[in-house]
Image 1 (cartoon, one colour):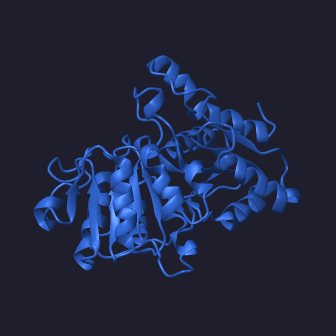
Image 2: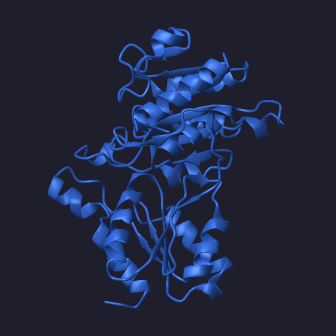
Image 3: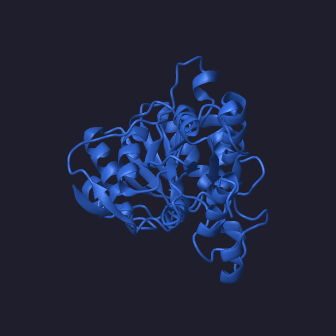
Length: 326
């Protein structure tokens, strides 16, 4: 095992796959000469050249469309958005072409493309640069949606995403690129659609994903000092969702708290809440609690931003609520 940064895990995954398969290329704003906006493609231009690591104009609709079209000629593009907030400019290509080509062509054209980049808040980036889009893309059949929370998962899942025959939305975070973690030095992949139990426990299940899961870890540590044992599930993949992992955990703990960095209406935690109460209602000993951001655009003020985002105290309060303790 070697300890590396999240950005290095992303770079390693892309580079290893590009060495393995010449049909894979990386395209996006500042991915080449600048080594990536967050240095996640550092050194790749030097190794692979400007035909496979391609800088683009500021035109997300244009290069997303080029990427989708190139899959129909046998290529396997990785399209980087500097942030998924900018992907809104290219979302027509993702939803109306990438997600639907296989069905509309009667299976003649798979669409092996990865759209990757950071999602959700990243400090004082204000309302138009702090939005979480996981539930938006997960709502569309034909897309797979992955949100890793650490370098190990990021590398293994990105390699699997690049090899997948369907379009994959791979969501990262500006605030995680510097995070460090142990990653195997040899070849490995992780299966898409399989959640991971990051912390085993018996009293309450806490489900989360992406960078906000760190808040769950903080809360679990505090609660353990009070004798409350939290089980933390990292979804890793949003679509397809590993419902069985959630069901099995709730059958053991009989309580569920869901932590998600998104607006409260129509999100991933809403979907999980429905599935759990629909499939294993009799195992619940308390109503499900879900924790989200405030139902407003993200503020710029750091004081307001701290109030807008979920924190460990929010998780502690929710856990105690489902356990009927003060």
